[in-house]
Amino acid sequence: MSRSNSTYSRSSDADIEHSTYGWTPYALILIALSVLCFIGASIQNGKAGKSQSFTFEPENPDQVSTLKIDRADVVYAVTVRQSPSGLANNKGWSDVAIIVRSPKGDQLLSFGGDFWRASGYDEGRWSETKNSYTMKATFPLKGDYAVTTESSSSTGAYNQPVYVSFEPRRGSTLPLLILGIPALIIGVIMGYLSNRHVVSEKLAEWS
Amino acid sequence: MSKNIKIIIFSIVALLLFGVAWSSSASGWGYAGYGTQYSESRGYYGHSGPSFFYFGSGARYYPTNSTRSGSVGGPGAAGRGPGAGK
Image (tube, rainbow over all chains, first blue to last red; front, side, top):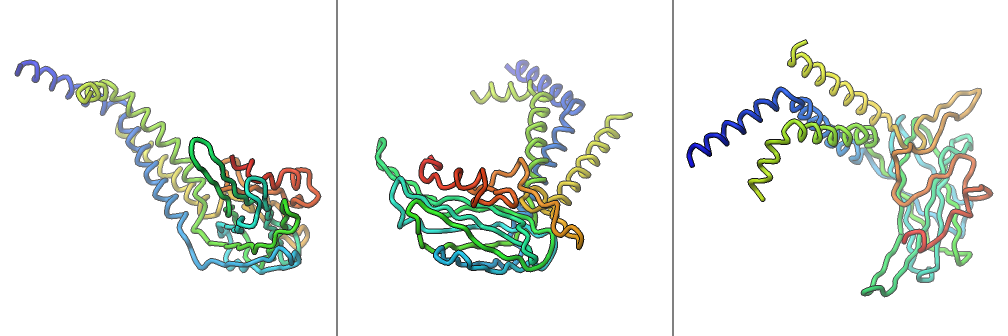
């Protein structure tokens, strides 16, 4: 019994020792890099200043609001909300597009989304509502930008107010996630391949 | 080259990659509007849509000068209502 334990212990130690001369250090560096990237992405996704909010009335399509950008390369999370409560259930829709123009009238940015509500009975009662969407955008140049909306709906004239919020963020999360996610996957695979005997033994112990 | 030197070089490369990613992140890379420039002669130029990697959150990007009004990909693709979310 004690001999068996001793043999097992020597075997595990040998595997672990071997792994330190394999891909394990690289795997640990990649996993550490991915953790750094995820923490960085979380920091860059943080709010970085005061939000600017506007309310648009769909019955007034000529309404223009001014977005003030006071520094270059600023990222905004633009959230657009409209209540779908007045829309016909399961078939009504309202579509709202946001258009951002330069001080000289050039169209710089345009995006949109639709709002609706639905419900039914399918192995129990269900309901879904879409009353907002978010688009992140970068404003590389400071200045005053004109913001307008375009709206249409299944009912022709759907006059629920549209709330638009521009929330500044510290930066883009995309580059850090593009680096961090593959680094994590490759790091875990390399770590597993370098230590698969130890991992298999541990899994066998637990099962 | 010894194993330790390789590991140190690998760590430095990883840190450099992180630095590049952080710098790109701080300049807002990947979102709509990134790359917009301005000159007196050309006005605003270089603006583009979101990168391939950005999915948005329930929103659609309309290419510049092609909003829903009068665009091929505009009104016809918009407002599909509940079916679009199922």
